[in-house]
Amino acid sequence: MSNDQVTGAPREQAAEPGAAAGGGGGGERRLVMKALIAINAMVALITSVMIVAADGFSPSGLLLDGVSSLHEWGEMSGRAVDGGEYWRLVTTMFLHYGLLHLLANMVLLWLAARKLEPVLGSGRFLVVYLLSGLGSSTAIYYADHSVLTAGASGAVFGLFTALLVASLRLKLNLWLPLILLAFGVVTTFALPGMSVAAHAGGLLVGAVVACGYLLARRDAVRLAVPIATAVVLLVLVALQPVLA
Image 1 (cartoon, one colour):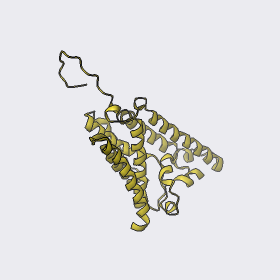
Image 2 (tube, helix red, strand yellow):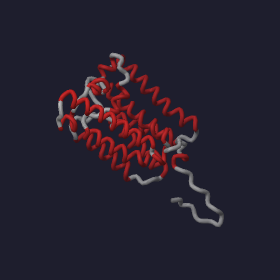
Image 3 (cartoon, one colour):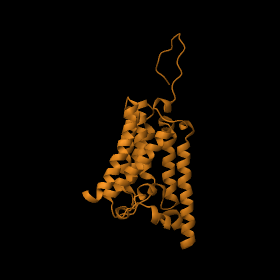
């Protein structure tokens, strides 16, 4: 609600949040959020069928720690990326170890995205998500090189910091991003098997790209920040064998 005082002249209609941020259309319908949840759920269904077909029905395998041949092909592995399997930097964010892993990430994605996508617009929201996921994979490549990891949490954590930036910039309620960030930090260190590097990489990249979109005054800068972020991440990936 605006703080402007009422005058005799007609008030101008407030711009939509997505338009104010320069985002693409469709944000109010949250099309990207729905598509991401659908894709992750579909991949989880496929991997569940593959696990049952290969190992038989096992509640623990389906819910907690099942690994299919699709996991083996697409999960993040620094050693595999060293061998040229660069697709793992992206495919890892659409794979989950069990349905509970999927459920947790999709609930967090829904909580953050339902507020953030209308603010950024669908196109920019998708860029934040994908670059946060790439930042997560890049951090894993450096810090957890020999560890196998998968999950959307790095990308989702990037949405947390992006939502915080948006809430500060547009003077929205801060409770949701702060609660999500606090929950993310606590679970990262409290639960076994969590990748600190993955979550930290996502948080950092989400904040950087959101700042570019929401704090920059010129369209050229808003365009340059995500492009530069992508270039830096790809250069870091290319240099890892040299710097390690």
